[in-house]
Image 1: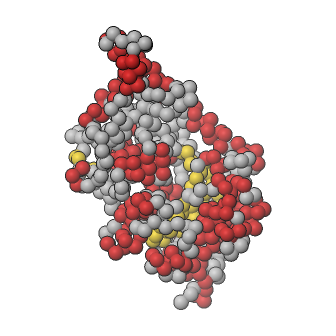
Image 2: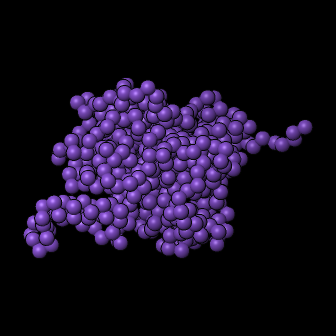
Image 3: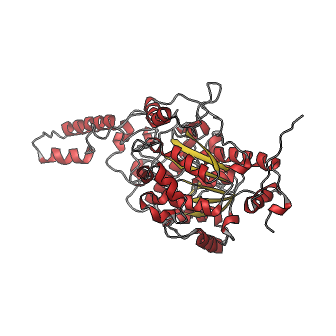
Length: 497
C-alpha cells in the first residue's frame, strides 16, 4: 500500500499555474536572449506555448516574431520589436506583449544569458545581489545574468532552462553553473545541469553545450536530462575539450552536475552530413556572383530529384507548422572566386593547413605553366590570387571540409562572417555551405524563415540552440511537469480567483 502523501501547493500564484496545467493548459514559455528561436521551436515541438520573447538583435527578433507570431499582422508587429533586457522591466514587457499580470503570465522561462562577468562577482556577492530587489543595479559586472535572475524573481516560473558554452564550467577558476545552482536554490528552485552533445540527440552536428534545468521545489521534481537516441565515439578534440570543461566539476564536487546519457553501440550512428543536406539541389561555386542575397519566392528552388531521402530530410521538409511546400528560398552561398579549386581538391575532413598546401601546389603548377619565377611581379600577383594569406600554424581550424558520413563540427556565430569552417563535402560543387544547409545542420526545418540577408541569417543560425536538442530537453521537462501536476494537491482556497 502506498502511504506517501501528495505534496500540497498553497502559494496562490503557483497554485493557479498548477491548476491551469492540470486542467489541460499548455505550459507557457517566455524566451529570454531568444535569438531567432531555436529553443522556442524545440519547446513548441514538445507541446509548449510560446507566449513571448526578448531579443536585442533587430533581425533575430523579427525572425522570432515571423515564425511564432507571423500569422497575425498585429501580433507580428507586437513581437517583432527588438528589446534590451537591461532597459525593460518585467511588468513593462508584460504590458507591451499583452501577457497580463507578471507573476501569473508564464510557466517556463528559457534562454542563455551571457554569464562570463558573473565569475568575477563571486559566490557570496552573487547571493547578496540576487536577493536585492534591484540586483541588476548593484553590480553591473554580472548585469545580464542578474537581469535573468530578476525576471525569474518577477515571473516566478514553475520551471526554467538555461543554456551556455562549456567554458562556463571553468571560467576564471570558477564552475559558474554550480554557483548558479546555489543561487536558484535560494530562490526556491531545485536545479541540475549537464554537458550534452547534440549529436547524441538527433542533430547532425557535434555541438557541446551546458544545459541547466530547474523546477520549483513545491513541485517535488528532481531535474533530469534526455536519454541519448544516437551514439558515436567523439573525435579526440571534442573529448579533450569536454575533459577540460569538466575539470572543475571533478575537482570541486559539482553537486548539481548530472552525467549525460551517451547511449551505447546498440543505438544508431548520429545523423550524417549527407543525410542532413544531401537532398538539397547542387550549387556550383563558380556560378555565384557578388551581391546581397535576399530571401523570397524568386529565390525558391525545388529539392534534388531522387527516389529516396533520409528520415532526417523528410522531417525537415514536413515539420508540423513549418512545412516546406516543395522547396526552399534561402539555399544560397557566398561568392568566393579564389577558393573553388582549393575546395574541390581538399580531401574530406581536411583543415586549413591541408587547404594551404593544396592552394600552394595549385599555384606552383599554374606558375610553372606560365613560366613565372619568384622574382617576377606576376608571380606575387598570381600567388595572392590563388593562395589564402593566413599562416597555417596560427589558423589550423579556420577551414574544414565536411565528411559525408559523419555529423559536422560545431556551427558558430562566426559563420555570419565566413563559412570556411563548413566546406561542402561534395568537392564537385567546390563551395561552402548555403544558408539552408546551415539551417538543416542546426536542425531548423525548411519552413523556418530567417529575416535579413545572407550574413545576418548565417549569424542567427550559428547563435541558435539546435531545435531538436531543445526539443529533447523540453520533452523531459513536459513529462516531469505532467507527472508532478497529476500528483499535486491544490486546495481551492489557494487558487487566486
